[in-house]
Every structure is written in structure tokens, then in C-alpha cells.
Image (tube, rainbow, N blue to C red; front, side):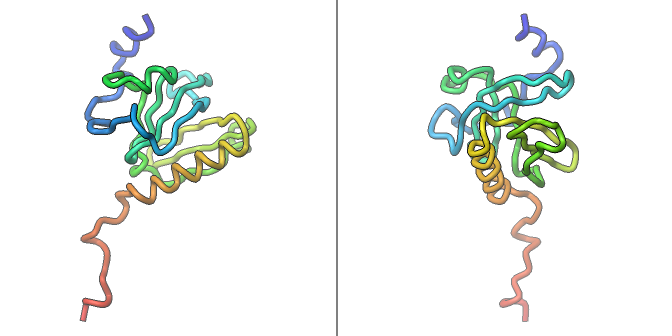
Length: 145
């Protein structure tokens, strides 16, 4: 029933959002996080996978390990600007936030070590996949004479 609701309300991500990302094989990082819902602000534990600039989440670990399964959601981390601790914002330990210019999502890790590892992994991915500066916008001062 929940799956029908997700389809009817358009909550499943567009396949193009994660096309070509083999999330079931060798992720850069994966594990359990608790995520705040987009519409109803309840907290749900989900299995997350970070791979090739995409942060995907699934209901459980088994779904993430299956080729052809559909993630519950996808964030292109290249569109994000910051990832940082957020215990003071949501008033929960081990919380962090991922922000773009348009939205902020909140997550809770199981412990401080996991929180820091997720922040570091997502931060590296933001830098690697950032669309903030393109090659054509970079000035090469050595060859600009």
C-alpha cells in the first residue's frame, strides 16, 4: 500500500536521477542513517548509499543490494553547498545537515564517529562533483598573457 502511495504522489525518484550508478556494487560509503521526512517531519531509519556523486536511500539494506531496485530518494551531492553538524538545529545527538540553495535535509547517525565519517565522505563527494565552477570558468593565469 505504501508503494502505491509513493507512486501516486510522485515520491519515487526519476530513474534518470541515478541512471548509470550501480549502487548495489562497491559504494563509496553505505550504512544506516535516520532521515527526517520531506513532508511529514517524522524520523525514519533508512539504508544510505553514496556513489558517483549520488546519495541514495532505501527502506533496507537488502533493497540497496539488488540490481534493478528503486531507491526511496536520490540527492545529487554536486548540487549541494554544505554538509555540517546540526545537533543544535534539530536538538538531537549525532545530527548533521546537507544543504543546497533550495533545501536542507537532516540526518542522524548512530554515533559521533559515524556522523563525522558521513560528513567527510559527503564533503569529499561535493567537492569532486560540484557544479559550482566549470572548466570554462577557471582562469589559467599562466597562459593568459
